[in-house]
Amino acid sequence: MSATLQTLDLEGRAVGPVPDVPAEDLLRLLRHMRMMRVLDQRMLSLQRQGRIGFYGTAAGQEAAVTGSAYALRPTDWVFPALREMGVSLWRGTTFTEIVCQLIGNSGDVLIGRQMPCHFSDRKVLSVAWSSVIATQLPHAMGAAWAAKLRGDDTVMMGYLGDGATSTGDFHAAANFAGVLAAPVVFFIQNNQWAISVPLSRQTAAETLAIKAESYGFPGVRVDGNDILAVIAATREAVARARRGEGPTLIEAVTFRMGGHSSSDDPTRYRESGLVEEWQRRDPVTRFTAYLAGLGLLKEGDAERWDAEADQKIAAAVKEAEALPPPPIESMFSDVYAKMPRHIEEQMRYAVAMGSGGKVEGAFPL
Image (cartoon, rainbow, N blue to C red):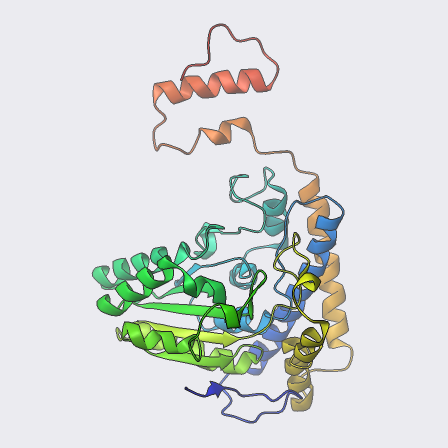
């Protein structure tokens, strides 16, 4: 079994090779991790109030999300799963766009066509995903193959959880990627639980990273609560793909501090002592301590950042909740490059009925 890569110990002290990251980026990375946690707290509160329908938090996994996002270029593509909304946030998506998607209103970049928290954003090259586990992985592999055929150096990042490694789509994607030496990185957030199924019931393999060997490419195991180790591992995997050397499987060992989603009660299937044990490995606390030790983080910085994030999110919620639902025309207007006559007629009927107008004849199917 390969060793688990680690840079920071539980107290935030460097115990391994430190990747080269500028000081201003170190502060930006910590601020982003803290911002993710504030966003999760606020959105879960909105769900409990009935103002959004569904939410999946990334609490405890901020280092894996932020560190892997940092290793990518803006021109690389992201194929996310449930807990990678922070990747889009890092790449330029706004709080308002996220809240609008959770509501499904006219400000939603997906025009209300996706489930809440199933976020994607064309402008930051983040592709839509499905609740059907691992379907994004063949897409990531296919896009990587296309990039290879075109001869460009774009890299695809396919995210998945530990449970997704048991699916046929994971096997198909990894097998094709290995055979074709496709420029794709499979990034597993091993948070120990696939809803209520523990990792011990998911696989008999020693690690998840070791699965890569059967597909003919490297597997790397990294402390997913250590952002510097995540950056180092992901950088190397991305660089390897960009050089044309094929895929890498990264297993980021982390922990889901909350439920699988806002619909889940984790106290029904896991012991509180396990959560307390993982709280000692909290990625935000560790990285905060590391930057404080370097003298980069001044007293009160973290609290000020949290307050500023909270204020910006509150403003985004106010702005988003003031917007109307998507217009009826949006169901029809971007289906074809040039709208056919029968679709145009259906749109006219739907708009008239939606506004309470009288329509003669049957709806044209």
